[in-house]
Image 1: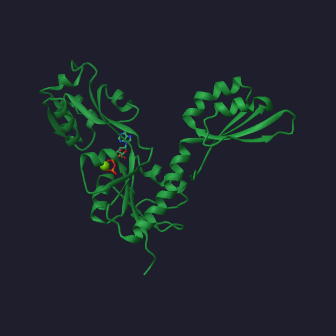
Image 2: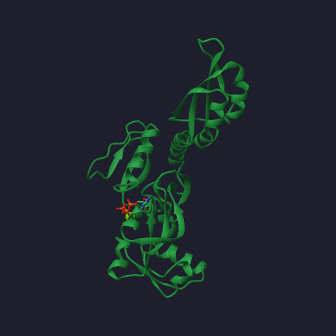
Image 3: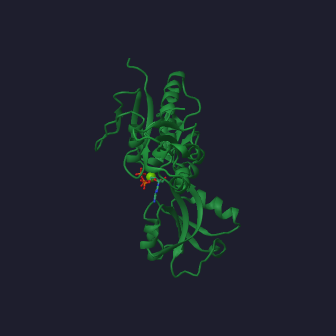
Length: 287
Ligand code: ATP
Ligand code: MG
């Protein structure tokens, strides 16, 4: 018998497929994928990947065919199953939104009363409309939802959107966000010992990658006499590393800070005399 492997289900083809493989690569796990390939073993980590349709992933995990999976939170909300969300993965961001034809007299959710809404997410939409005490006719279709109004099938749609360009090019105007979603890692709550151990090792790497994505490594040159001022501006993990430069009176300052924080302080850094600021990506951050 071979060694035990963690079975991870990811989307075979579609928006989450490549970012999921990319995330594994960042974790140092290389997977070969090819057309028609349904499963693949990692060469350097006890993991086996199953390539599936995203809608099927929660059930396969719940049934124990796979131990864990990567899927949009929207799929879990529409088809609740016995899986646990372990981690949000920071990609596949989108929102489930209600939209109407540009010329429609519908301005708000209230105006949808008695109208027909086409969607692939009837359960989420029903709950949302109930919470707004609005009764509408939900028409479930499995794809090409955005064309429903133009062919007279519905007065509105409730569909996934990221940039909004698909809605726009179909002559639709968004009126409300029903839910926000992103890719998440799901797992079965009752793993056996060995898959739980591997899942733990996988999560350790994954969290290192996710933490690294939100942070930047900052390098800058500064006049030595202004280092205290600059250290105070940099909201780093610890105090920055300060190294002398060959040029007298100048030092190099190194720090790790959140990307968002960096853009807020960059002007103050320059005012404090910082020069040659380098912003570098980090691959892994193990705390
Ligand atoms: P499958 O063949 O696996 O069933 P699919 O056509 O249902 O694929 P995709 O369109 O590839 O699915 O979308 C997969 C997931 O990507 C969605 O469930 C959602 O979580 C996420 N997503 C991110 N942005 C968008 C978007 N603009 N439109 C649709 N899905 C999006
Ligand atoms: Mg699908």
